Length: 238
Image (cartoon, rainbow, N blue to C red; front, side, top):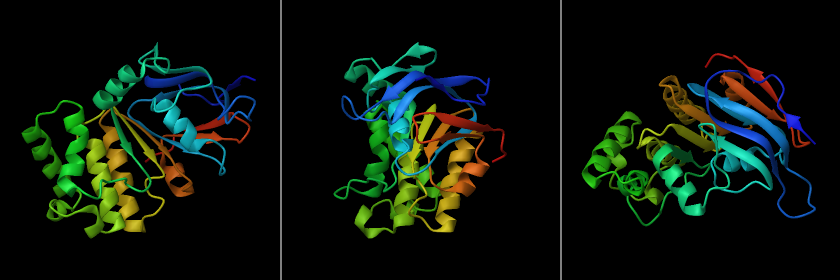
């Protein structure tokens, strides 16, 4: 079934989906079913919908972390989901920052080392990565935790560190999976502000969220209906 998203915008787009379909196994219900949409640059897009509607699945598909059952994820107008694993990995390293719900910091390494990881993987010289990491840690109020292990910092601080890691390479696209789901209001606002700020600099930001207030503040909301398709709500201020 074709589920082209209704209410689509015509703004410039780096990432899109064409007839995108995903099921976890052959014959299973399609979590995403024939979805076609474009995600605008210079904007925050939220993926919303009831539990089980496919928010995180769509996020991972768009980030080229899983392959669709059918259809294509488009990057810069070119089909990307069928690229070999190594090519998709290189694209993510060069162009993508990812924020996980639970930060997913390496508990055996320092905060500074965790933040530097994305830059080193992308080929950034270590001294440049460490300098940039310290700038970001200072910006988000956790520079004094640079030499601590993740187990020695709070959940809110850990998520700020995860934001620093995602922004280290100044990526064209940031994906975030429920990035404020476990945070207090003040920490959630810091994370939201960082994402909105990044989008305002001409980048693409996409986050899956249950938070209706964040969705209302986004530039574009992709509301997954639970039948594999989606509706769009466009134009809200940040």
